[in-house]
Image (cartoon, rainbow, N blue to C red; front, side):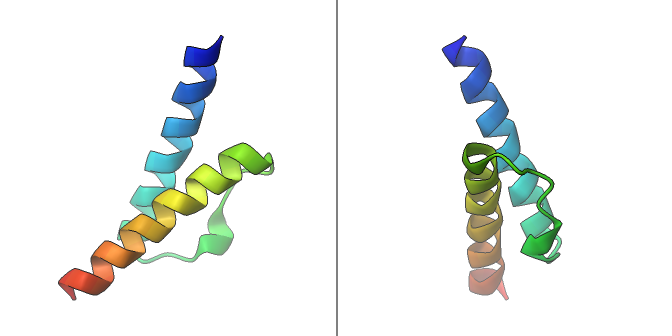
Length: 55
């Protein structure tokens, strides 16, 4: 059970990361649940920081 939950959160993080790499808005987050949303936004933030460093 814990592995499935972790996998969902890791997937949310990686999807947020992919959106962030393309420079799209964080308002596109599809998650409503707090845990998944926070992981998605964490991935998005990480990608946006990397974009800023390489730009």
